[in-house]
Image (cartoon, rainbow, N blue to C red; front, side, top):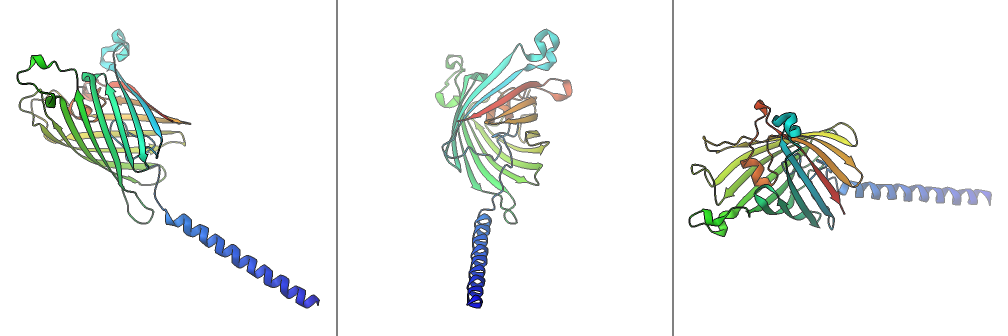
Length: 284
């Protein structure tokens, strides 16, 4: 009788071990099904450039961006703090892979509307990049049409299309390149092409769980030779605190909407003419 009891207990133990192994295998398979790489960038922007991060489905982001005046003004202008430009943005996740946004900038009293959509995600031991599309429409509401001959509403519009291609190299380092096309229906410089091309790049280096350094640069490929503007170079410090990301920024571009900062970077790092500012994102 004891032998039978021992065999029954041994059989039950074996079945239990097999069941546990099957359960662990099932859980392991579920983990491996989605090998997407996340947290390539913590902020919706690297610094000024859009990053491949998207707002999650049904999340609502409120973003306040400030750029003060040039630090070149010195103590007389409190290193730019006496002057400022501001932008408010509202961004909503229609799905995990599709965002829409609306913003208003004090620069040229500009309204802009954006759409951002994920094409493919970086996969562990598989596809090496995250690719995201971005499109924007900016409306310059400051121009007084009466000052221009044959000026129409369409001349207030500027369009931008970007292809954001990023890679999380390791737990600390991420990079991104961005081919860009901009079309401005009205340009102040008569020898500047309405359709303009640019190539941007950015990187992020994680210092700790809450702090990272970031940098982005955009090379305007067909800027008019007599242009007063420069290619934008921006440096940022990202601070993650609970429900929001706080970015401290130094840039030679004071303009903040996407087509604007690429075409209107008025500062010059070599001349000490750059702007301090911040981006503050709050998620609801």
